[in-house]
Image (cartoon, rainbow, N blue to C red; front, side, top):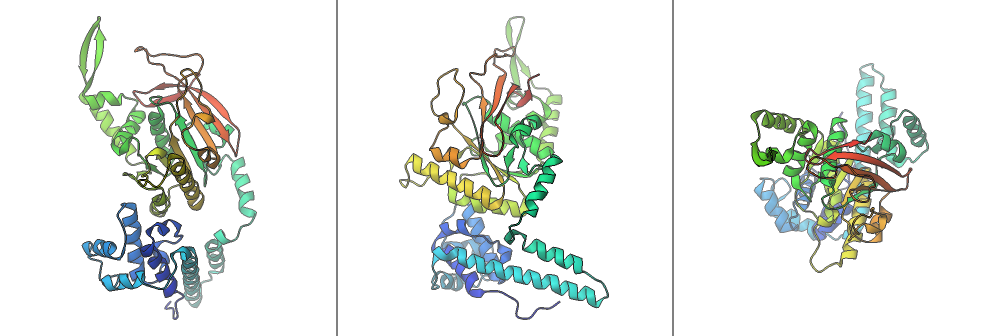
Length: 432
């Protein structure tokens, strides 16, 4: 059905775009997507702004114009003159949330008209769509109507074992802690060399196998290492042996090189193919804390992610000379907390430890950074590799015993669980 006087605000759309051109950091406060804009020029321009921001490129009328020109889209947005016009508009970048509110309100009105228009067409054809209309309109404004029905529904779902949280690889453990709740951040910590990265690879596989889509920022180990460990966890083979082409073994007291076999490579290849199909998405490259929200918004829109893993927090880009360590820790912690809340995703952030005596269990006080890291996190996990009590060892003398602790939990109980592990295969299992 053709609509006349389509609801939109050219001034508000220009206000959002112009604010970003004046102050690129204001993009982090934007609450709309590209399709929220009515003007096609503005849709293309905003999508490019998001992509430039995620790439860490400087943004102003000239640089974004060059970006668009390189893609053959500069004329689509009205040319360089229109970009300069947007940047020179009489607006206040600090009011960007207000401009976004107007843009989003107009988008909802257009959607309402589309729903009603389709209903009119069906009615003219003799088909009733009253229930569909009421349902669609209610869904459109559900976020604005804070009621108790959704809370009651969540209780019924919890009774059936469907808690709105991101699970760990250990269901029994989650019965005590509730998992990582959507909209809230969690901390995962552990000693260097204790197996955190291997543990994460098993966690990613568990989520992928259960069709729980997540986004991973592999700051610590990067994509190649992470996906290789995921494959090893799936196939329960030694990932170092595959990468090194073999391994040293002792036979009759003599050290001999044992080459990897074609069969082992074929297994690793099949496992790599399998884990690459999981809904586990990777965003490589360093980013600033201010870029986190927009990147998460993009992946949620495209892939429906429900969780975010940041491995690890210390590797966010830190502006030179702007912060001391405590100030930067607080900025990253707030960015993570706000991103989880805004986009309703569960967050797991890997944090390192301060110096801790040998043989001592990790406590909340050992986590590196300011106190805000702990207060902003709703749950804190520790993979303990020292001070765990009775220990088991493999045939090479490596300790295989670990302890997985929930040290803090604002929305459930704390818990502890003894694990056995084979770090060469990136595998952890509950001790019998």
